[in-house]
Length: 143
Image (cartoon, rainbow, N blue to C red; front, top):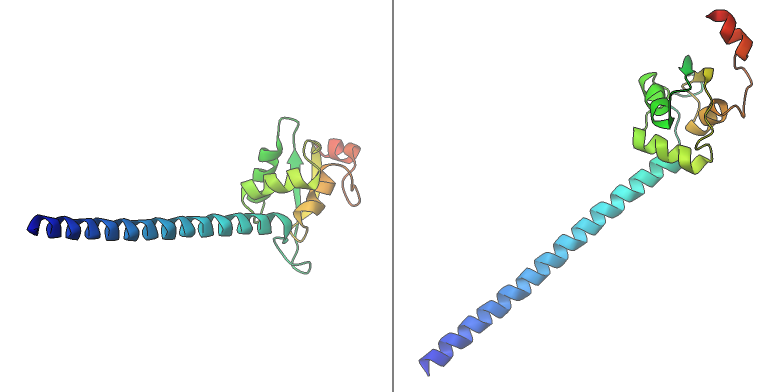
């Protein structure tokens, strides 16, 4: 009879340990899901809530040169280096894709402002908005 009581105590302990282990696994899964959800939300927020690098009052004109050999990643790096955007390169590339300007950026010399949003800059870099931009012959005359 003593052996039966030992087995019963052991089984109760194992069952309790399994229950605690399951609860800990569920808590870990919940934390992973919360972290993934927050990360996805922040990424989406950065993509669709575009904020200029400076206010309209504090905006600075910056001249950038986009060459034919540059892809969208290179253009993003150029804009980040010149202080025109504050987003990460991943956010910029997602903005290009979702904006409809994917594959439409043209080489040339452009005057961009730190008070412009990424969509405003992409509109200029794609040639859709040429207001205030140097004409191709002006850029050739400067070289």
